[in-house]
Structures are given as C-alpha cells and as structure tokens.
Amino acid sequence: MSGFLATGLFPINIQKALKSLKPKEKKRKSFQGPTTPRKVQVTSETVWGTPQGSHDIEKQLQEAQKDGNPSIRDFKCILKKAMKSIDNKNSQIQRLEEEKAVLKASAAAKAPTGRVPVQFDPNQAFPEIEQIITARDQAERNVLHQIEENRRKLRKKKPPKTLTIERTFFNQYPKS
Image (tube, rainbow, N blue to C red; front, side, top):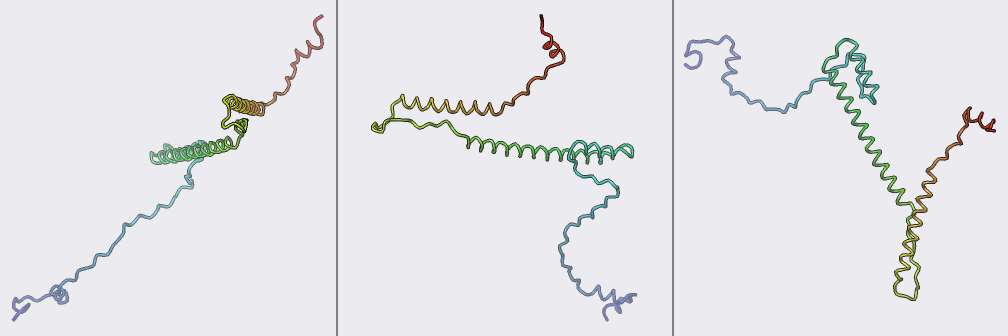
C-alpha cells in the first residue's frame, strides 16, 4: 500500500491533491512596459494657453484669483508659462537681430568701395610711389563722397517753422 491508503488520510478535493503531485510548469516572463496614467480631463471652462504678452498673463492671474486665493500650483503654472513666453520672444528677437546683421553685411558688401586703378606708364616695370599715393588719395575721396551722400539721403528736411501769433503780430507792425 502506498499514498493515501498507507497514511489513512483521504483528501477532500481529489483534483487539488493530484495537481500537487504533478511538476509545476514555469510561467514565461513576458515584457510588460510601464503603464502611463491617463490624462485627466480639464474640468474647468478656462483653457490655460501660453500667453503671448503681459496682458495675457494678467488675465490668467485674474482668472486664478476669482475663486479666492489661488493655489500655489496654479500660480507656479502661470509663472512657468510666462517665463516660456518671454524666452520664446527673446529667442525670436535674437534670431531677427542676426538676420538684420546678415542683411546689413550683404548690403555693405554690395556698396561701392573706394578702389581706384593706379595710372602708370606701361613702358615702366612698376608704378612710381607718387602714382600709388595719388590713387590711394582718390580712393579715400571717393569713399568720403559716398559717406556724405548717404548722410544727405538720411537727413529729413524739416518743414518750415510756422509763425506764432505774437511773431505774426510783430511782423505786421514793425518798430518805427
């Protein structure tokens, strides 16, 4: 005799007793990636967008303070968005300044330079020093003339002064 009969014990659930005698199968470990919680739906009517200026920040602060004291979380959120907006504006300004500098440099490169060819005798091997100095002076005069011309273009003509009432009165009746 063997098994249950030898001991004198009889199991209540025979299936459970038979399962314990079988060797257990090892479960294969399957990869389970991290689970991200679902986004919480926005319940308030106000949608907090990134402000484009200080006026938008002010509106958001007023909206947060309507119900009383704003929570620290709302205040921090508004400040973070304000900082992000300001940073975006600053980077946009920097990019535009760089584009402006590139355009100025390209315009300056297209502007006429003060180069003047040296006039020398073709029968000589090299020009004389006086000829080089003359060409350099002429180039400087050309550049100065160009600068002066640009200044004249930039100056705006002021409209003639209008006479005040006192001045027109005195002009009508000169001193005798």
